[in-house]
Length: 360
Image (cartoon, rainbow, N blue to C red; front, top):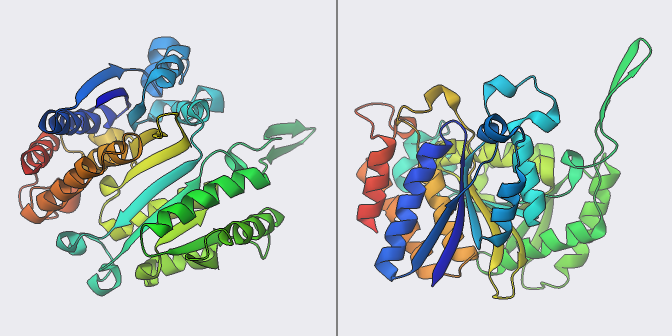
């Protein structure tokens, strides 16, 4: 197969972890005799420095032509006080919108070899295996009106949470389809005791659930979900949630995995004529500028995102499973970065990449 992939290393540790992810992708392609075409583009802070905008038109053009996009991380402290349209994160929102990706899949798995890396007790974390399905294109991040307004002596800030029936339907169907291939359970997260937005969310999810009679559905309020993720994470299989709730809860999931550097993600849109999903793949972690350039960053989230890229955008399930198995083997070997190794000599970013390639 020909794999046409756009690579957006981004800021901070993004280039380092993306480099190892690309090496793994190339290793897989060589082993299974696929052809890889890699194109590199600008996104985030580096794009602002070089072009004046976090999401250049050239990057949008490259993304529209690629079969899949692999991203590192965006964000730099120097832009913390910049207006929203001049922040690196605006580039991430921009490419999600340009690609039309609407469901963010964030697997959270507690590997047996890494239970001690979590600050939670082993008996709470052991056996955790879920996917958080976060809606990406609606909600408070995109709703209008929005802004900061001066009204005489008073200053007022406004953000609007808004969803349409069709937005809720399509991400719900994605969650139920995923559940059918797993433990056949969807937990929908909302705040329907307070928010009309969540009341519509719950109503539509219930309607979609009727199309999937073999999948169990339950509902949980977002504050209780945040608590249950810590107290009883094994109860969850597919967690379906709107945009902001999912942003928060999926980062909480890093506590279960032992490090936020462990978590991959896939942002999925509609199917192409070939049957492959439009996809944007990235580790969940941020740009971590404090350790950038030091060869310390954990690349496993980025490498796991390559596994997702192979599975969802190209349908290469065997190759994706090989990447996941290699990650697990490396974790068992103890050749991990400092975030997963509180004592002893940690591995470097490059050494972890070497180990994954060797394990495939």
